[in-house]
Image (cartoon, rainbow over all chains, first blue to last red):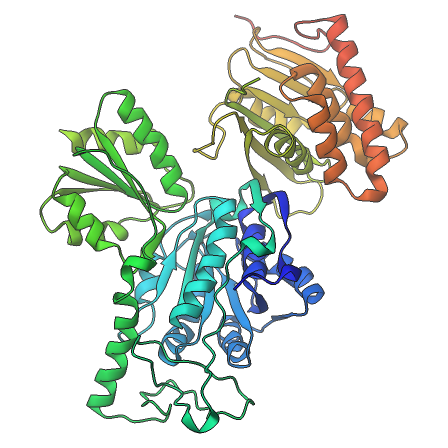
Length: 385
Length: 199
């Protein structure tokens, strides 16, 4: 279905990534956000708070991140598309409720504008060190989707994609920005509403008596009914059966938790978004994401000028990890080079997927700024040998 | 005309419209002139008076690395900003200063210096707040980096509508001052208080 024109600020703008993310959320149909504003993500909800009343929605500033991350889920079960926005310290506090969203299959978006950590760390400076936390931060076995934009334009486009994935798979989607992308200002083109595809809620069409809250139509994703519509309504973080009622047997646990994983695994090809520039048998492939992918691009160009055979694989979808493509490339390339603004997170996934077929070189950076292209180039040269 | 990658830094103190100046120039390049622009900003926790600077990259091609490495052009509106940032200016680069607020000392001789009493000109127009539009006009005239019409549209599009007319007047005032400066000294404006470093 097409976007609701009331939320779409069609035109050519000069926006920072935070503001573009807010416009993406509005275009996607988000009409509720709860937040506990934190640098460098504040501008997203600041704009949302001023924009959303005009399109018939609500922003609530909560008392903390725990409250924000559960309030938005209440709004979703009430029928709204909803999200919250935070950065490292707040993201840590939201982990319990990210697990709750995964378990209850609440479609929603968590925006994390990454800054240097651990703890309070570097409030106004960038990092990409929440990548593992995005995947593994809550306890138990579950799957999420995580997307990484590298420009304000993508903060708009991919926020819509994040909402669409969340609705399609009934899964919390992590929108992993970083301080540079959040605070950098560039041209952002917002198309007319009738050119923006939005995925509506998977609302059941069944009659009240036929509806099973966690029954599926074979694709692993249940249909939803909202509170107060007359359908059976039971939402719990406890292991539950198709009726939504607690049923704490190993068999129910196995069926539920495998389904939560498989609904994502089975659709991985569709969820995987990559930007690739790999010609025949590159010696080195640089794997990067977020702001680092732009710095890496410059390093790749410098390496090519020196005659090195270097390819690029940019992860737009970081989770589920696109291991199939890494495996394929590992068969034809000598080495992967993985620059990231952390001391080694996604590089472990690359190394695991390469499985010894190609060597893996990290280009770690503790955060606070971006890499110098020369630092990435140096490792590309080393990896090419 | 294809724009080469040009790195700019605009620096001063909070309240001078430093960030807005960068937004106007970035908009002019990317929206009204079909090129690319990337702007980032640094400021302190103060709402007014703290050190404030913006980095702007303008290019005919998509911009990858988002930060200024060695600015080609620098606009400096406070002495503190001058001391802090001018050493990073590219050799042979362009330096634009707020004439009454910045004392120019120890510059390499190749630097092209242009100065504009933007605050004073803005006050003469009735509102000191529009000094950034004066500066943007002056910048447009002396650097000839961007098309005048593109910048004018960006000014109109970036300020509150009730102050649009005044800002456009400020822009024209700065532009005219820049044109005159160029006529008086086409390569670089020489003025009394510049002292160049001994080579």
